[in-house]
Length: 178
Image (tube, rainbow, N blue to C red; front, side):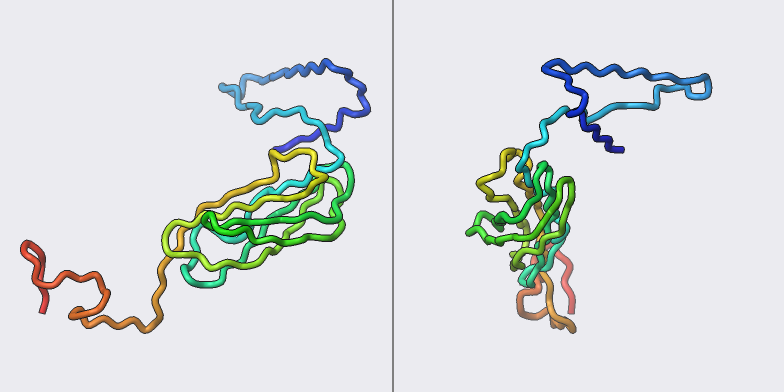
């Protein structure tokens, strides 16, 4: 459960104190409550963030066009109207997308970027925001590791006598076939 409280109207000054009171009755033998990821932060006027990759997933098909979709969020107090989102695949050249629109405070939006072609094996994609007005940069970048699966057309045929099937004919201490 995530709870957000706006403390602007409280006028706390420079000192902030919080008190937690945990209570339980005899029906609960353990504590059963925890607090994690507690944060007091400033709401900046301009703060855009990339929260996650919606697409691709952890597995992709090598050599096929793969969509890139990210969740863009406005964490700032002013609406977002335009910025640039870039991504880099496997350390290559950045792919750029100029987003324009109207994203209100504390709202999120699915943004579709240009597709890419993954290679077989390990792939890494890193997406980031480029926006000169952004006042908080620690939430601008996301990364995802994925694995490119090798696919072959159907029907697949192998006579086990030649070709790249990975079979080892007539090797000592190995099973042979006829």
